[in-house]
Image 1 (tube, rainbow, N blue to C red):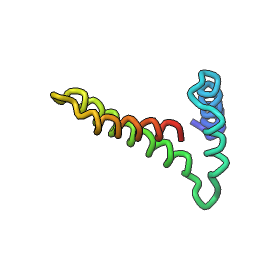
Image 2: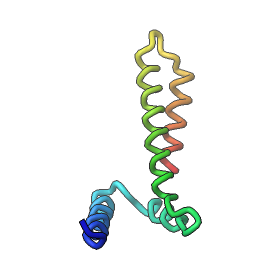
Image 3: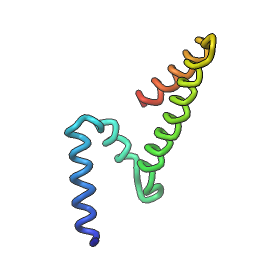
Image 4: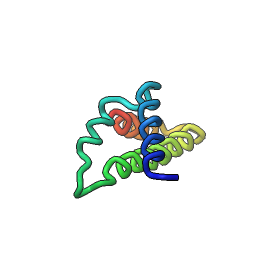
Length: 87
């Protein structure tokens, strides 16, 4: 597959993600921070977000299954997850 076709597909996917509400102006702000010094900045940030999310959701699930639940830890995990999502 040539580069032009790949770029068109990437642009279509990006546009679709904006239209469906999965991306917003914060994503554009991330793209603005990417430069020649760190050309993979957006990829690194998104990857970190997803790996942190997986870890936090796992901790939340595990905390909910414990008997009795440790609501202090659950509260900490929820605040971490909320903070990660809002950034």
